[in-house]
Length: 503
Image (cartoon, rainbow, N blue to C red; front, side, top):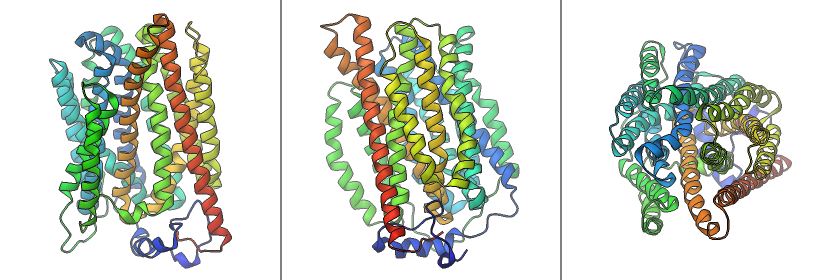
């Protein structure tokens, strides 16, 4: 495609909004982003294979949420401690996805995806055989490494193999798999936990991941760029990024005595990371992409929205089982409502994104998310499932409607040259939001219960603490809406000036 001949469109734009950023990014997009996809790979078969991995990784994450109260009881630990079953997984994901994306761009995304499937299967097996809590955390780290390799490359494979006019629909299928995984996770997890030990939740992953790895090895291919004298991988940067993510989560979660000192360590780690990145020939932090406002602000919108969503998602299983005394199987059935709504909305969002443009779809999605948090604030202490179902339906519809157009905008802004890297960045951003949201949810719950406990009953204390967390989630969602409005205004101002946008 000739960029000079394309019509301005917010849906197709990949140009940065600042003139000084246009030259390096436009050069990379013009020369790299429109290379034809690999002709020897059937794109729909590739999408099917990556969808299995997406489904199982999402299924694993959503089924563990419903198991947290049982794990806390079995291991004799607090809510703040059991959240590390989720958080350690997300920390490792966030630490390795950018590096995995870089490696995928070098040697082929399909190779990294296959390796990730085998590692995930191994980690799942180790989790199932865990004899204690510490072993389970280590096994979750192995499982997360496999997830990082898969998630860093799956979206990049889709973008590489599908033309732009079909990209929204393809990413919509990915969102559908996420919805199905979230749908089956709570209900399947609740069913398994009602008749079998929690170990079985991890064993279920193993055969599906082995099948995924075999199918990917047989049929999945991606274009591998020819690189002469490629600069070394930024391994030190990856190590520093892992340290930053870990110390940030340790500081926010409040799970350890003196954890606030971890936040102080960031004063040293962040400047050191930026110093190292500026001196790398191929840094882990791709500055040219971050200068593209469509890419960077799209990721910020996703970050605040994911963090807001996970803060309540982490609390709801405890709310339903501890405050409402709901059986675990029933709680799983209730929690699947949001996944049903998200799964139904995913393909619709892809169609709307392809035909109307992302910038027309995203404000509707953000409005639904804000409405959901407003409704969640009024969930009562007495069991009233209608309130919870209403919240879950709204948040599912909103997230399902937001993810596809926002991801399509982000990946289109990155172009094919950075497809695996951008996929890894999106995944890192999402999982960092999950880390912070989970840690903040557990930490704030402990803080608020400590404040309210001397003056209120146990039930009222629980409800007030929950509502405070909902209020924080609402603030985060309003920040996402503000970022979107700024981005839309900036794009309209650019179009008014008559600056041609690259596609």
